[in-house]
Image (cartoon, rainbow, N blue to C red):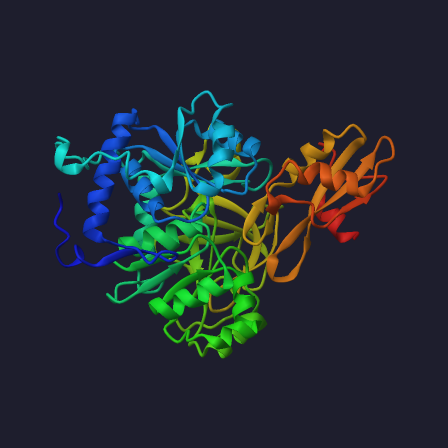
Length: 498
């Protein structure tokens, strides 16, 4: 077993609910036991396992052990319905599911209808199943069987259009990303005293990579909360003297405005970081002033890029900007009509990215992969933006169809498919309606064949989807849905007329 030296006795993970601690030495020992148990289950190189549910310290054990024996991990939002989860298990070919207590029944229901899935395990109660390291003969138990181009992580994304797709992130992608994140201009956590408060979902690419893997890779301590609960978060920052936390705009809004915040000492927070969706200048400044911060930095990325592409350089303070490309990353703007590069500050175009963190492709979807990755390896983000004289980028619109609500992706085509399955619906189009710091909510435009009430259609959809995908913007009955000659719904035209 590798000697961690000075890190062996350092606390790696703290369970923010129970206060239980795990040192780096204990983490390594436990990961070896998980790896051996996975081998005994029949998990092999190139297999995929799924982690589903709210945050738990054991996420680290499953991810590291699976990757250590050459398997990959797909991460599934616990809010998915059993049918939605089954779709993800099918696409990713997940062999086993490791679920938190709040999602175990749902995962069992999903696994029953997926041929490739062999079983579901309660991730927080696995200690009794694991072999005792002292009694099991393991030669080189953490032998790393994977090579750079092997699959390591399979988050799901709606891409630039269409239904959710499995994103293929390799070991090389994640290794490059973790090296990029530790650069002094990005998210360095090498002071030896950093304590990261992680409450954004680790079944989301940002929560997993930035909130868990990055601090562990740099030897910091991670305080894991199941989810964001205002009181628990404030107590954790104060109790553990949290120095860093990955935030989303709704949490920034809470910290900037809620009276509860004044009851806690949050002075240890040095450099909180916002992601998931763009953070406005006014809200940013309000939080910075209230918490007496030097700044709050913002990043930009997506599942397809492991996830970070750009970030505000330290002391940049161009609030409202998504920052500049991180090390080893190249970005440019391209006119989506002519295909020409844009080199003039202030002129808008689609953001294209090239770097070692860009995905290998979408699982089983070569056409979708070719649509977003060019022959010379540029990834088309689907976001429209511009850069200023200083080289900082700003996002102003998007070509891609996805709706973002509280940082979660919602595919309009998915909701449209459900609406079209209703016997009274002839055509349907779904767009996003802005709702401030929460991003957008889905609004459905519907052409009916026979009369039906708005409530009936809303309930019909909401009963079949995860809570964050619900039709919170309602239903608009219309006589026409604008389409291109090829039949593609012209969502931007719908937005401009409403």
